[in-house]
Image (tube, rainbow, N blue to C red; front, side):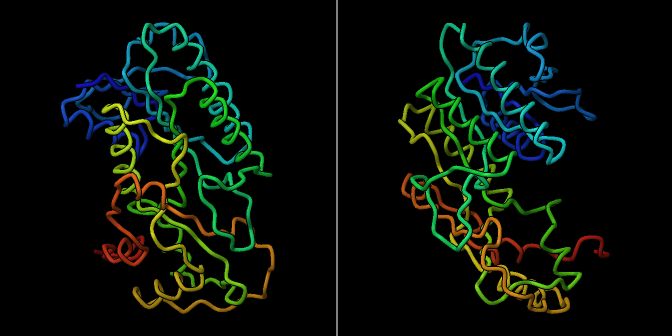
Length: 285
């Protein structure tokens, strides 16, 4: 069994750490503040933005999973975690007797393609937005630090507690229908499963690619998704909006590399994932 550090124990990070603990691995979670409830594995309290708070953090880990969540969409928050924080962590582990493997969670927002293009791990990733630029810079820094580093770019995450599209469907929002604006998704349970799958490969000595794009099998026009949700949950159908030729983040993401490695999605499409939802957010059960 391996010694594993999970940096960031939010919704997905905690589930990953818990599953690893249940599998018998020696797991340590790292959080900025103590958890509100008791958990079955140790937590190291530290703020990665402060190098001084990492001084007593052990460095003898076999693997590190970096899955942090900024407090807001402000560029400064991303810089604090993905620039300052990651630099501090890499400096801390630079003196380790044995260098750990790394898994870093990033985002498909690093792709600025906006005309419905297909993108994969070989596509140009030169983001314009400040938050995505910090993500892309962190990816490059991690790859430069170790050839045992792997970046996982998640598309839009949905699932329990992530109800953005359901709330939009409930409001019957207007959606662009012509010149389709594509959306890409991954269920939160698949996020956890993908990270566990890739970590298992790393621990088994499999040479992973530097990057994997984690998204379900079916990029789809947002109009189609919202129309299906409206029908599924008896919401008002969306109304068509005027055409915007260059809608932001309008691309189609391929998961070919991840599936070629052997991963099989728990929820291959939005229909599979949302079919498990029993009611709209806030509705009585």
